[in-house]
Image 1: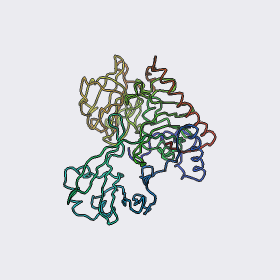
Image 2 (image 1 turned 60 degrees about the horizontal axis):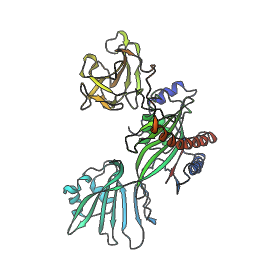
Image 3 (image 1 turned 60 degrees about the vertical axis):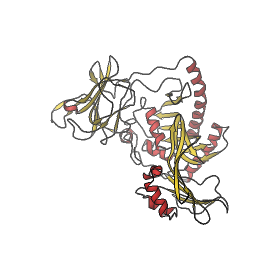
Image 4 (image 1 turned 180 degrees about the vertical axis):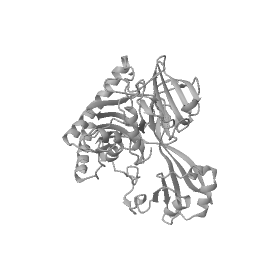
Length: 471
């Protein structure tokens, strides 16, 4: 998902909302006041927190100076040169830019050493720096004479490993008349942030305004995908309240984590979600405040974001030019867009089938099955008899078979008869029971109180789009 892609829900909202949805306004003095008010609310939500700070807009991923730093020597938005004391190392930091070369990065860090560049480009121990990821950070420490003390390429600022979110970086230091490199892994610190927002033009526009990372926005849509059709049913004035994790390393932002709690008001109906893992592992799930699993038996759509190009029912066939029944729903999307199974099941067919082109058919039980057609390719390992889980990638959007453009043809079948997946009442999931239900109720009660306070904030200050960080 790339920045700037407006989710198709905005198209539907333009058709159904009382007035046209306009682009988000720039952050005003009034909006900044809202953010200050939200910080005050966050203090009430997290009384045990040591400090509260605002989440930066758009530059949320920029690396601020270290907590040990006392002065900033340059003010470029993507480069910093800092010093803690007269006798401390002189530390420079820059971000990888699109199209950067290693020579350009070293030049910005004022490291003029041919031996260093040769080492970085040829030594196997430094292979992780062969690939420069835009947005990643490179740091260098030098002494007063400009001699390199160490060089660090933070190639993985926040990644989950064995249940822990860690930062990985390549560390290069002088060794004799050359250099040596090693990979270093360090744990990250966990923080909690809260955010509120109101839909005006699209989900992404609202979360951007509130300082919510794209990965969290995607989680929000995924968590409630069985309840809200984000392709068609967003409306102007819909609201969200969200509590989520972020990670930091040495005081620097290291990526967003998991959504912890969420409330989304869609067309005057509230949908809630709380992350719960009975054993404390990463193998948890989302439940509403009543303890009912949000992992419905079926997701509403097989694509994260797209637009409906053809609905269920009679239509003029785009190739044969005949009036015929359309047995599914078509979702237009770029070629290569991942297709997800809408429920658990067993692959009944995976291959080429007449006008369907590359198609996967999944049997979910004796009654329900789903079909995914016109794929550019079927995902690796998806074959007849293979068990798949809800949300698993089973293929990629294409235009094989009878198709005039890249799209997914999706069919929902009951007793092998196709029915309209946009109108059918989908089966629901089971609720928690016994000790798990009690443990969840205790956890959910705290999040429910936090969400209620955020909702009161939005009601008191209509139109507020803000977020707060709690350390």
